[in-house]
Image (tube, rainbow, N blue to C red; front, side, top):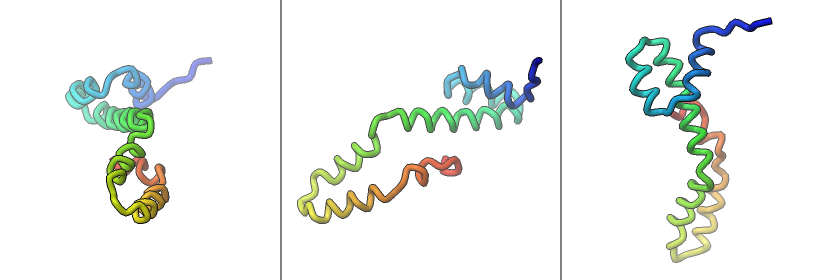
Length: 95
C-alpha cells in the first residue's frame, strides 16, 4: 500500500534537505504556499541550530555576572535566571 502525501507534507520533506539560505532565496519567489511551508521549516531549523549549541545561553549569563563584585547578589541573579524555563524561551510564537 502507498500513502498519498499532501503537497505541504511533500514540500516539508524536500525542504528538510535545503539550507536556510536556500529556503529564504528560492521559496519566497515560487508562490505563497511554498513560502508558508518554508517558513515553518526555517523555524524548526533555527530552533534545532540554537539548541545544538552547547550551553551558549548559560555561558553568556555566566560571563555577564562573573565580573560582579557582590557575589551574594550574583547568586540570587543566578537563581532567578535558572527559574526561566527553556520552554518559555523557545515556544514557536517567539520567532
